[in-house]
Image (cartoon, rainbow, N blue to C red; front, top):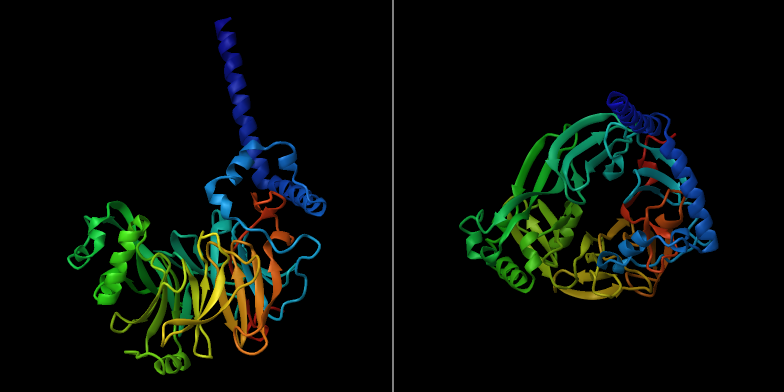
Length: 444
């Protein structure tokens, strides 16, 4: 009997293992996940139309606990419901990447004109598109980890670079400028110059020290990857600001700069800026440091600061120089309880000359601006919405918003994150950039 009992137990264990294997095989090879996603989309549609939430009705305690955590208290409502969501055709192609979907190209809020095959990558929903080339090649990176790639329009890998990418990039003259970072132990790893700052009083094992990674866009070869902090502290004004920030906020020790955007000035912009501030070369970057509430104009040839703008915004993103000579910045007002806004800055006087604010516009994280000709597009990332600012004359004189896109009510499968009224599912936007149609050559 003992032998029979052991055989029965063994058969039972083997049957369970076989069942687990079979389930995994079927869900991968037969794509049962797609069936589940399809049903989820139907349920989401019903929930949106009837303004109900089935999870709430059936008492999903885990979902409620997760939603009412401190992290999710700052999720803001959408400006739309299912019936009045934006539907008009775009003037340009929209390269869009939600937090929980793959990158695609759209010409209306509900029509995809191109998608890239990302089957060469694991966990492809975490792949971030940074730049679309005219021939359909896409520059992508693994979300805040190592791995930068250029793929063709069919998803074939043209080149790969093993370095880390952190945030939004810029490209000019076949050079790619990427926020990257290294990790240091504070205060043990500080060099002589940094030991003379308040960073010496930090006690943090993996502090993020930002670097600027420069790649050849054609080959993926690393041209440079230099650390910023050691150069920046040579500037007396920067060092004083850094010291004050460290003393006032312990979290600065873990991420002293948090470089979240790089913009390299072209020839016309160099001429424009030189009329207002003195530039020391023709190779100038605009750098946004979220942790310091700071934007600088940085001389890449001499590794020096030309100009500092600080404390005119809170946890800002996406500084953009316009042809009118003013600098426009997405002011997140991060977790302050206030709405976000766009500030228009006179870089000569270091002052705000005007702001754009509107009801129910708030993105505590990310947030992106884009100028195409004289049109200003705003990506409210946390809300999952993109709108255009239309002004009577100049920015921001008698302006209104024209909403163009909402990730929360399109045909994508939504994420499992809810708005603060727990009425519909949300999905934020990581990046949503427009590309002029006459400059995209690969669409039939």
